[in-house]
Length: 66
Image (cartoon, rainbow, N blue to C red):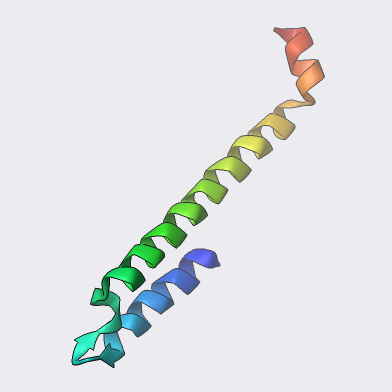
């Protein structure tokens, strides 16, 4: 869902113009969108990693198996 919101925002900022230039091409907007995409990717990876740990069993149980 967050990915869709970022993509819609990118499309909007391509269409919207300020000072005869798309908003997307302003450096601060471009950098902020890049930061948001990075945060979303981080959340995806940290959530998947934790789900794999929970799916495999409690940490104590996995350590005893090892």
